[in-house]
Structure formats: structure tokens, C-alpha cells
Length: 143
Image (cartoon, rainbow, N blue to C red; front, side):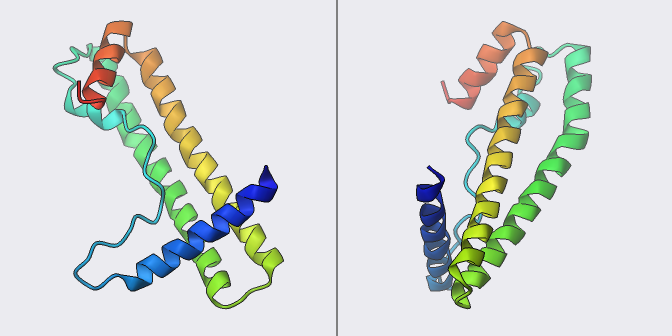
């Protein structure tokens, strides 16, 4: 599977580089990182009253918000640096082995970010009661 992942990541990085370079000043740049699969924490924060969070749950939410976004942003910054290094290697014609190693690094950061988001959902599944969690998912899904 890794044999197919590296060429796909290289193609994606190249396409992103070309696409980014083809946009005019007034056009929005494409997202450099993939979009989050799930963003549950902002839903819980915005709907704390509707979810009827307890005092303990509100304290948990505040503690989560005081630490986890910074950790995620730091990881995202590292992922952006890895993408920039790969982009540079591609554009400067670096050896294929170097580009493959950089592509693997980009993939590793994607896995870390996706895993971090999954752990976030697991946290809220444990911190909220079943009804609150179901309600949060409904809000997230626009139901």
C-alpha cells in the first residue's frame, strides 16, 4: 500500500503547488492542509447551553479549549513545513528518494492530524452523556 501512497501524495503535492501558483491575488488560496474529517469541539462550545452541559462538563470544555487547539495548531504548523519542504524539493528537482521521504513525512503528519481529531471525538463521547453526544452529532450534521 505504501508503494501507491507515495506517488499519490507526490501527485497531490504537485497539483497543490501548481494550483496555488495559478490563482490570482483576489482569489482564495486552496487549503494547504486537508479539511478536518470531524470538528465537534466548536459545536459543543457554541451549543453548551442547548446541550445542557453540567458544571463539570463546562470545566472539561474550558480545560480542553485551553490546551488542545494549541497542540493541534503546532502539529498543523509542522505539517505545513513538511508540505513546503516537499513542494520545494519537487520544484527544484530533488532526487526521487528525497521527495519520497518528504512525501512520507507529509503523510505521517496527515495521519497524526486525523488521529488527533478522532481522539477529540472519543473524548467528547466519554465526557458527554449519550443524549448530549447524540444531540451534538445532530447539530454537527445539520439535522
